[in-house]
Length: 98
Image (cartoon, rainbow, N blue to C red; front, side, top):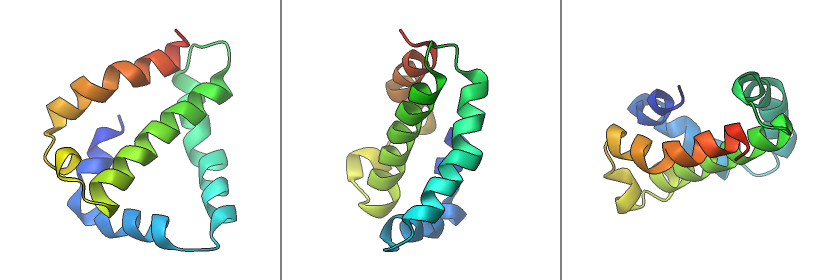
């Protein structure tokens, strides 16, 4: 669901801008509250969908930051399948609340 967004090279500049712009906290919170959290809550089966949404978003933003802003080689070099294998189980646990 989310992986294609991280692998689209044309979006790289958007991620860098998103993280480097100072004073845009309100905009970021609006994006999370209005777009990201509701989408995650729809698929979360945990007892606390809001917490699930926060944890999933935290994981995905961290990956995007390491991959596209810091360009950490270990994360940049991960293939789509490796990324899914390494992170997917954690994301599923957040969604299930287990």
